[in-house]
Length: 285
Image (tube, rainbow, N blue to C red; front, side):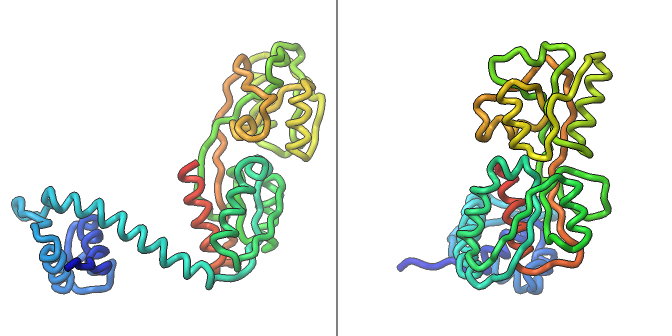
């Protein structure tokens, strides 16, 4: 007759391994150390082989213990995923989300569609704009959350990724060899502009702006047409811009951190869920 492993025992087992002791594990799962010890004995009896062995004063995993650990992680992950399906249908609310154009132009629409499928009762209202504009709106309480390039601000944030800025030109062209160098750029204030102009000045390369626009789509279209080079991240090349290429001959540029910001007084279940969702999405990007 088959047996069912206890999720509580598996969760306690994982806590013991990660935290290194019964007392610490008990604090995490809300049980006493003796209760954790009983759970470990129960789990070992079900498995039929020792999970721990003594080395000096320490309890370490046996070979069986290591195997059970990997399965326990997978089982608990699946268990939590199934429970989240039911929980996601119970969470409702509105999230006002600000996103920079680089993300809105790339994988963001598909990601947002996935989120809406997982959480059908959470309505997301999106504003696409430049980082300074979005963070100013967040500070005024007009947005709940912002995904933007790092700015000088006191708003708490978490880094999502740190892509390098690159020079971008029309595929197969020699635009980057022209002097003065024609540049198409999103209007300022913008760190992409600042870093581009600083790099060119330091390298002694003359340049001129041939197009300025608040729209990244307009700038990308101008670069595709060969009106000039621009500076963004690799995302612009990866998504929907097959006519663009990396202009390697121009000076190297720094990285530009992408962060997620939460409004300090706008925490609720809906905001927490979309925050966790984007953290997970960017961790696999």
